[in-house]
Image 1 (cartoon, rainbow, N blue to C red):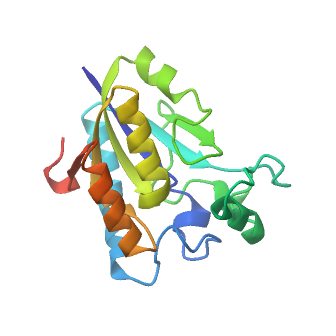
Image 2: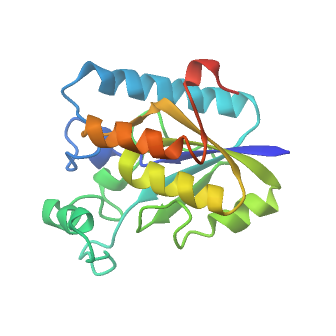
Length: 190
């Protein structure tokens, strides 16, 4: 039984105070720094325990030609000029840089499995158990958890390592995810 940690969207435009995306994390609240600290600790613990680590970033071509236009969420990314491939905003946030042996994937949807080859990578590593953390709770985290469960993985989502600028939507997402995954705090996980 191999385990993997899926770290979603720990990127400058999403996490940094000067980042372009305002709806993934409320940078004005103390919980945002606690979320980042807990996430760094969880990442370090997963590394110590020999987890497969997959950093999944969202990024689009500089002209946004590859951006899905079917929803307001993605159209807003283009309006903000955020997470362009090759830009500072699309790069890893400080403290979340992948190590050479870790996986880094770029996606253009909500689920970490969307057009990334993640399932094949996990299957090749005989991964059966996934832990998911990152941003935003009600978007990419929830979509990834649902998708992973549908694909037959045992899933844990780290509540204190997930963030959203919308606390109500995040709470609703955790309630939904609890039907498909174990919802745990990073302090009593692994």
